Length: 310
Ligand code: ADP
Ligand code: MG
Image (cartoon, rainbow, N blue to C red):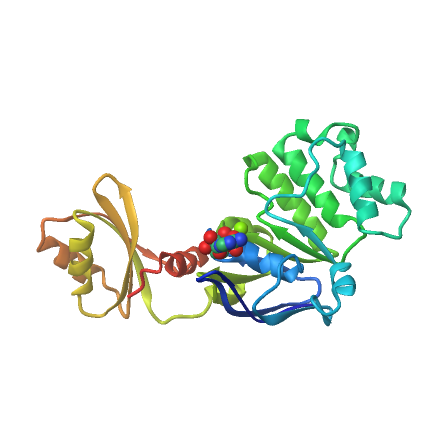
């Protein structure tokens, strides 16, 4: 349904996207996960034909977004990071305006009313957009994306700036839309993605860092053990003490958790807890917590975005 093939994009000397490829099957909800600045919005702007790429191509239902823009774009509803709202218009007038702009051939009043009902915004149809809360404004942006019944929805961080109740509302909405749309949903928050998505593409520094179903990503079945540990002391000093232990594959620093205490994630071939305990005992540092941890999706994500692997 959506195919991104070897797409690269530079802004001046900054390589924002470096040869990324992925596919989204019809009916999937794909989570596009990555920290701020990873290249999510750039990718979405390219998929929707909003900006061009330097190399590579994007196919929507087999239609190249640059060669057949009309056919490809009519299949996509896009909610950009900053929704294109006309703040001084009423909700209804704005949706009518966008309907005409998109040259949609459906009965207008009926179509807009249906979308407004589905998104629970029919009570604000006559209100000026600028006077509405962020939660409403985000749903109006979504309504705009749904005009013309496109089979594909591209949603760029739709939950940013919403309060917890609105986030849950938005999540339920996306889940419901996912029942009859192919969706790409971007976020820098793992739980956000985990709650609604079947498959995940993780992006970092303009490169795909991991991809697959949640089960696949979690069960990449390492025959290693992972321990989370919090130690009081100097971060670098602790790091070198830990790295000196026999059998350690990787130590990742997760930062300061409380004053003077640092959390680390230790990956090793065997149960390393006794050796860690002895190694720390030979220093002035103190173990505040040590806990075996599974390879959760969060571990994988942290590992990828910490960029501190060794
Ligand atoms: P994300 O959406 O994952 O936060 P973006 O795609 O917005 O990331 O940005 C990726 C990188 O490209 C960032 O380093 C950002 O600063 C840079 N960037 C994005 N848009 C522009 C632009 N128009 N001009 C220059 N640099 C840009
Ligand atoms: Mg972004």
